[in-house]
Image: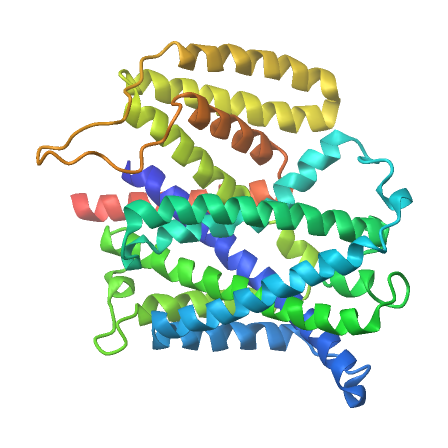
Length: 409
């Protein structure tokens, strides 16, 4: 499983790095709007995102290098502020919603909804960051599942409600992709000046939180892979005084800062999500394989199912709904074949008498649903994302084979 782990990990890291650059660009745009609204003398002053974005990433990298306690305290303050601002936006914004802006619900068809889902899905990437913090959690068996489920429910509800309010205030095609909150509450639509200023600073705090957590997760990925010998050992080293992986954290910060200097927000967005979706697909498939009585057969069925579902999304987008229906029927046949396999309950007892923790319920139903949905969303990703995925995977394969050849010689 080493090679799939390397491919999965590197592609996921690329998504994290690109996402950090994307968020930093948006942070710079919101910061410029917030400053011009707060200080009259700065009105009309433009902050270059290619400078501000990398600067904030390097600043947060320094915070993480100082220690987890510093980052956790700052994160708690930013999250509290962000939540208060989000609820304020929702409560005030509901009164300015125009139902005509919400009709029809899917003006370009549900196929475009699926394509958009594969893009905005990166908004839900942060939930795996809870798992990355397991080593630094006092009671991981209890706290990790609770943290993931509660944050997923809360953030999902907030995300959906906020999107509904914004699209209700302002026609979706007129929202500024880099600063939609400022557009909705600006003079052209809701025209609530005092909220507009709070929204700008709230977005700054919120994006700071996302960057803070994202940079933390990236460094822990490097540490884990370096410990397993999949990366340079230097990245796994912990600073003797600061007790943090300084080398890994600086590496993450530098890569993200370079990407944040990109002049185009839309270009970066097209490269997103396929690595994350691939990682989630691997996790769902891994649960089935670990619990299967015949893992080899299940792996073959999973690969066939993923190809069929992803192909359905890709071909269906080009040729129409008919192709999607044909592939969907074929995918159902494969899914039923997986259901016919024998899976253990997962409640195994180790030699020391301890029960296995983190047991996924309703196997194979839940992993199979995750495998199917993630494969479909992968098929809906942009062409640039697929080219990036195959390019990164190709480079990883070459380096991995080169390392294996050197070890053999």
